[in-house]
Length: 98
Image (cartoon, rainbow, N blue to C red; front, side):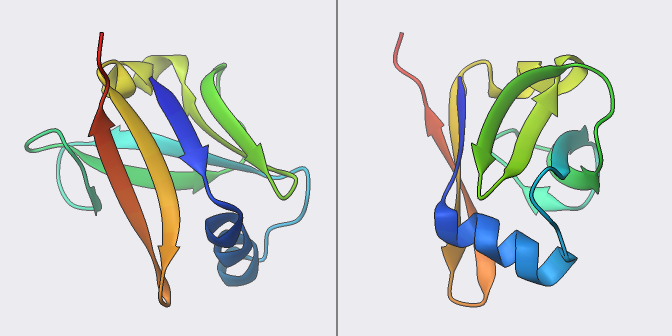
């Protein structure tokens, strides 16, 4: 269970969302609509700022990208890599090997 945000993706967030070092980007679980995932019928949303405790994180370009304790189950069997793909982001879920 790992979250990895590439430098290029972090720069995209900084440019598109006017983020500064020290800011927080939270990924959270949604039932309908948003970023497609490896879990059928579940999607990811994003919010800015720190809410709750941080369970899984990656700090890149001074920005903390994270899942809270409440949503950490979402990556229990997966690693998530966020990469820049042309002018957008790509979310790559890889099943972890136990």
